[in-house]
Amino acid sequence: MERGNAQALEYAERLDNSVADAQLKTFAERRTVMEKAHLWQRGQMLGLMAGVLSALAAYMLHLLRRLDSQLDDASVEAPELLAAPIASSKAEPTSRLVPTPHR
Image 1 (cartoon, helix red, strand yellow):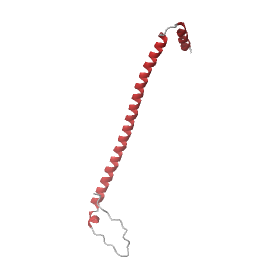
Image 2 (image 1 turned 180 degrees about the vertical axis):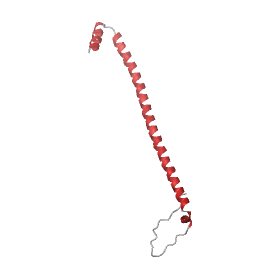
Image 3 (image 1 turned 135 degrees about the vertical axis):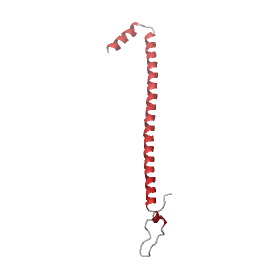
Image 4 (image 1 turned 90 degrees about the vertical axis):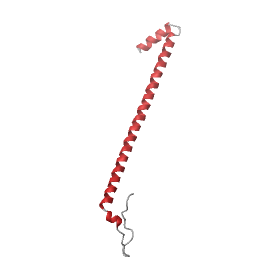
């Protein structure tokens, strides 16, 4: 309040444009600072989103590699099941699952 009153008295005492020009200059300086801060904030947000997306992609690749190694282990453990012909009798339904190579 005191500062506002002092500025109002100074403006009223001077009838020239020096106070108004000083206020416009200060406003222009604040505007440039705020534009730079906004640009910096936008860059931070894009960086954060890129970090989250890269972490998600790394986790997905980890899961894919783990699945691939599990499929390799399964194909190594039971190669005779893959090569053996399926003998089905007439009494059994033919809906049994048959292991197949993943590649």
